[in-house]
Image: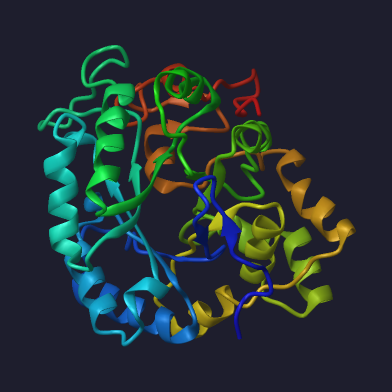
Amino acid sequence: MTAPFPPFQLNNGISMPPVGLGCWMGTHGAALEVEDMVKNAIDAGYRKIDTAFGYGNEENVGKAIRECGIPREELFVTTKLTSTHHGCVKDAFEQSLSKLDIGYIDLYLIHWPQALTEDDEALPPDQSPTFVETYLEMEKLLSTGKVRSLGVSNFSIKNLDILLPKIKIIPVINQVELHPCLPQERLLAYCGEKGIRLEAYCPLGQYNSPLLKEETILSVAERNKRTPAQILLSWAVQRGTAVVPKSSNPKRIKDNITLVKLSNDDMIAVSSIHKKPGMHTSLDALVRHQYDWNRNTEKDGRVFGWTMEQLGWPLNKEGQVIE
């Protein structure tokens, strides 16, 4: 059973399924597991697969796609430029294309705005290659016919304000952490005005997510006879945001693409969860490892080398992102 929501139209006229499979395995690679996961997802009706060079599994994702029996043109495949490759966009893209070996890539994203050296040291925002320079190099890839759409990931309003006046091709997607604990309301409105679709990674939170046990989610799930995960994904898609949940469990894979139309009251209830004490927070383990969201405390001083101000994620006195 497929989702009851139609494909999303991107600003370049290409359509994209609202629900896809995220292929970050929690560790680098996990080759055989990701192959089975992708094949199970395609068998269940998924037609969008999301991976990245930094996940270390493009080869295995590509192998699963080639062996799935579905015509390539029926699939939408995303991969991402890793931060250490900002200065060599063409070569990095060719590496990803070769590893995937699926003819072309539907969507190519800047994974993070930070450029890193080979030693994983972050360059300052104004030091070359800046994310503007990197995106301009990505624009050149469209003329090759090997990529259909371009986008960004983890870009704030601040950094989109820097990027957009200097480029010719507006990103079709901004992929960000997005869920009821971090609904990204201001960013959603901003991107909507610019014609950029938001796409949610961590739409369920991550491992042992508190959202799956949250009382409002449980109540809405019981009322709609759906799982908490289905409610979270339905809420996101109904807001107009695409989602790329990850699961290697065949049953949950099927559940995650079977969405439900929520009532207005249910949508308001889920949208209000972040207003509860302590609930406005990142659930991304990689980010939280470096930043204590609720206490507004930098654990190592930065998130992947940049301060919250440089990332454009300002916090209020309670340590909550100002949305």
